[in-house]
Length: 396
Image 1 (tube, one colour):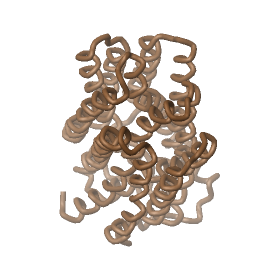
Image 2: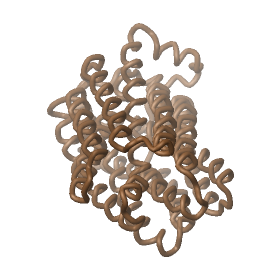
Image 3: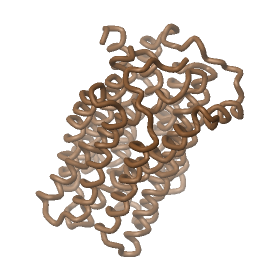
């Protein structure tokens, strides 16, 4: 990978890290808010779901904007919205106000992710493109690691408001992005006059219909399971009898397993191809989810959680690499954004489902069994409907 490509990867990766830090901290903030505001399980699930509503809106809006005003401008706007919303949410005095602000934060976060992956995909040679996007996604693990450390050292002493103020700092990072994302990084074949209706027609045309069905199904099921499981991890640990502080410790250990998951996926994706890596890591995620839901000791919980982190985040990296490669330049931002938006619908359903089922005293093995089934269906969709795009030039 050339120096220019590495510089762009690090610049976009920083934004990705901050987004991951927010998502990671949210799971800990929810657990802290539950104690401070006496929230029930349904209200806790609602916080995660409203964030996903915002992410769905942001993925559509900023994905379309990426095809109209360019990748750079769309990326900067999404990051600013995310940062400002987080800063204000630190001063929330009620659940209702917090939910409104989380909607805005989610919109910024949901817009940044597909635009950043599209930007990296378009500016990396075909032979290393998949690896570059998976490495971009690896910044997500670094963000979760920072979130775990902040949650462990900051929340018990200074509270959740301080960590939310910290997550507003990415606004300053937009200055770095402005410097390192240049005009030559923008694709020259963007047709800014194409209407939304025309973009949708292209995505559902005979040429791209099968790809769109596959992507929307996989995104929905992967995001449904990810947010349903990971936003509830600290709370699930508490439900299994561990204290809040100890749950932070265990989740920190499990989070460390995300990085090798990314690096293994990044290495394999240019050797095995997108389909096989994504399918394999999804199957590994499904097995790990079932093991986590049925674990009954600290050792088994940590082992299953580490494997869940390893396989699930490796699958995420492969999915982000695979998605932009499915569409031509003119609708690539819109296609990636809409696929991510459909996924965010799953992110709405997942946390709400967990909160509702826990409230009805449904056992954790059954809940995680649902996620296992969902992930296996996603793996089947990739392996049967997906087309391999490894080392192929992006369709202009």
